Picture 1: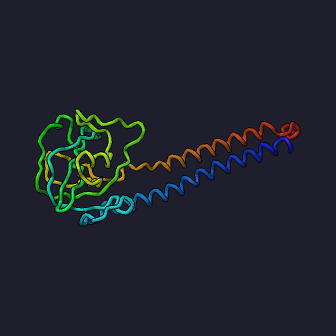
Picture 2 (picture 1 turned 45 degrees about the horizontal axis):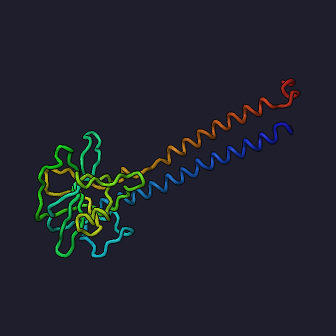
Length: 225
C-alpha cells in the first residue's frame, strides 16, 4: 500500500488541477459569450446623434448617424479581406456643423487606390470604435506612398486635422467603397478549445495514473490474481 500511496496522491492532485482548469475555461466561455452578446446588442441598436463629449469607455460601439461633408484627402490603411484579397480601408475627415471627426468609409481593392471617391455633403451611419491594432511589430506608416498599417486613431486624427473620434461606416453613399462595419468576428473566443484541451489532458493523466498504480502494486497482490 505504501508503494502506491504517494503516486495515488500525486495523481489525484494533478487530476484535480487539470479538471479545475477545464472548469475555469468553461466559466470564462460563459463570461465571454455574455460580453459578445452585449457588444452585438450595442452594435445593432438604433443609431443616435453623435455625443458632444465622446468617451472611449462609454461610447465604444455606439451606433450614430452624422450629417455633414466628407472632406477631400484620405488615408489608406492596408488590410486583407477574405475571398477578396489585399486592399485598403479608406479613412477621411468628415465635418459636421461644429466639429470634424474621422470616418472609416470601408474597403477598396489595391487596384482602386487612386480611384476618385465621392466627397461633399452626405449622411453616414456607423459605429464609434477605437481599434486596438498597434503593437511593437506594427511598421511605421509609409507617408510618401500613403500606406498605413493600422488604424492608429490619434495619429490618423493628427494627420487629417480631426478629433480622435473614428466612425466605422455601415452605410454610405459611394458605391465604389464597400463598408466593413464593426462586428465581433475579430474578438477572440477560444475558451471552449482551451477547456477541451484541459479535459483531454485530465483524461490522459487519469489513464496514465491508473496504469502506473497497476504496474506498481505489491508483487503479492499481482500473484494473488
